[in-house]
Length: 176
Image (cartoon, rainbow, N blue to C red; front, side, top):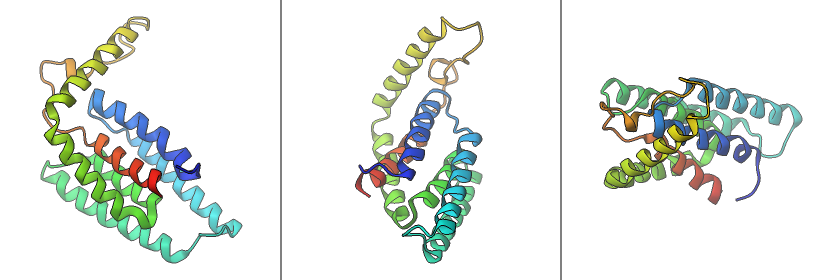
């Protein structure tokens, strides 16, 4: 994987998203908004500096792809088939990944299917991560960390799709 601006921005955000989605089934809006603002800044800088590779057509295509993904994600969200954070994250990553967005979406779908098939293993991994967090949290002030969902009696049954999204983006970054 070549060291690039998208990689430097996306990889740490994806690591945070995977852990957050596994532990709390949440993808924070602030992470998605930060990715969106950084993309806008990076793209604006590329156009203003005349950087090679900055083309209006590619940016317009990325914006169109992101809009379509966001609309379809909203429809899936209203049907309760997808989380709102998942839809927003996928649309934002389509901006960053540009012409590789279709590959990203296909790999994300395949990774989601693999997660669905491996749910028993995923549940064990979630529980192990949650127990590690609880042990680390003992050194923090009382109530500093909320109880992870894997340790609750009413643990959600859905797939933490942030993991699949991270797999799709990592695949594109690694092979791009």
